[in-house]
Length: 371
Ligand SMILES: [Zn+2]
Image (cartoon, rainbow, N blue to C red; front, top):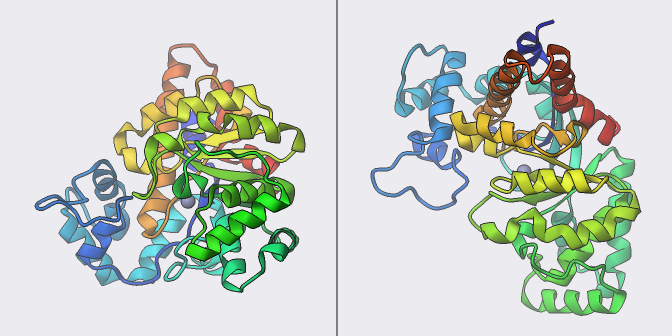
């Protein structure tokens, strides 16, 4: 099979993603969920006039039976006519994503759950457990600082026994990576928990967050760490994965893989870390959607430095199923352009390009998460 046909057809493992929204979305709501900002748009500025907005109108409109250039208003009107169940079904199925590893810990109200994503998308689903969400539940249940570490470890063990394939840290959002990530001892953890509980149960104490990273390592399944570009509560330069180097070195001997998620604009740093350290992997998801047509440059750069066995595909879609579809579509288009060009100019053979497509599309994820 020609590599371009393989790229167009290969079923994908989306190794970090969230559910699709269940409810109908009016224009204002739709515009608010196709940006990572939680702020109202500037006067006279529309989310449709953006890289993701252009890509969405271009590649999703035909799946809703719309032809040619359509406006955001026309798109959302048609979306409401068809209804969310059918929109989700069409877009998820057209993505060619066969397996979703779903982060079950962020704003899940209103999102399709694992079973609904499987049924609607005609796909398999597995859970990725968000460490901060487990900790916040334990704190809300008034787990004592003394009992916390054991309760957390046993909850994670139970989640893995029930089929969870990974854990996820949002240290980038809650503190940034420029904190001490050494494994805290029991006394330090207890002090941090007391300080945390005196203020809020929303976990943001650096020592507690560092403990969560190590709880993820101890759980033995791949630990995903969000890096780079994300929601507006993140300070970008503190989410550079290079700042995680001390933690990555310290966790190397444990045997648990660490996956640097998304990483833009630090995907080159992530690729470097993936080359240097055997247990480090990475992806460039999320940026593919929000970079739109520019995503081919991001994909091209992701193939510098790192062994091809270290890169995974993800969409990091949350909310509108357009983002699940676009994650896959923009990845396929970028791969076809980048690898196609390398084959055409003789840098790679067609067989080499096909091999890399298979690895990143799913083979690496199936090996890493033991799917
Ligand atoms: Zn995510």
